[in-house]
Amino acid sequence: MQKLGTEISSPPQTGSSNELEPSTGRYLTPPEDAAERARLLFGCYRRGDANDPETYTAAIAANLALYAWDVVCRVTDPTDGIATRVGFLPTLKELREECERVKSLLAAERALLEKGYRHEGNRWIRPEVTA
Image 1 (cartoon, rainbow, N blue to C red):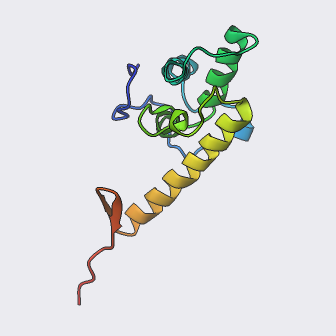
Image 2: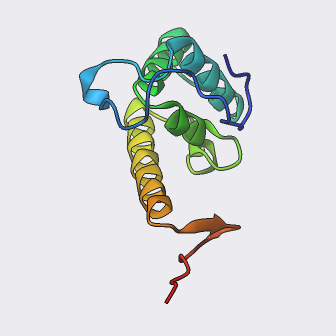
């Protein structure tokens, strides 16, 4: 199991990120790994005001588990995840919207890579055309 942090070099062995949709209700990320990433996310905020913290934590972890590991890591990343855009504990709706946004972003990035583009710094480099 991966430890807390932003590296995603060793994702859990649950299949590719395109195999299942969240609507299937099947976990793409092991629940215990999603719970660990939820704890990382909550650590990015000041003390929260969840009505029932245990239920809130379980609900966030369960929703994270519906997404592939690369999506979960990107959404919970302390340097660029949802905590950098939402200044208070996110609702389940906000979390799901962010997961869907990141899922689409990662799919677009994969499509560019498949077309031969490469990412350097903060920009995409077009593949060289050979004549």
